[in-house]
Amino acid sequence: MPLRTYRIVLDPEPDGSAWNVSVPSLPGCFTFGVTQAEAIERAEEAIRCHIKGLVADRELAPPPDSEFPMVTVLAPA
Image (tube, rainbow, N blue to C red):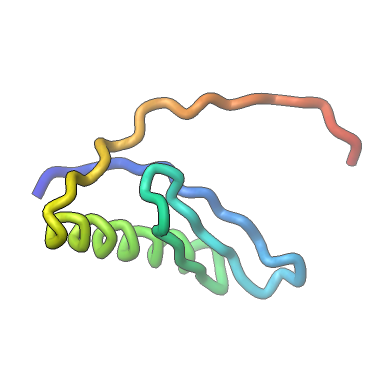
């Protein structure tokens, strides 16, 4: 099985109770964790399961992420 690298996005719940995770290159691939570490661990599992589902459905898994554009802005605190 080849190694693939996907960017994940971690978003904290407003009350600080959990971290939501999405994978921009894999639409519909979401998970969460109580801590950042748990969220990342669950993201790895979610990505593997998502790709396994794509393969089972005879769909192509997106290639690993290349570079996502990033923007730095000065914003009020």
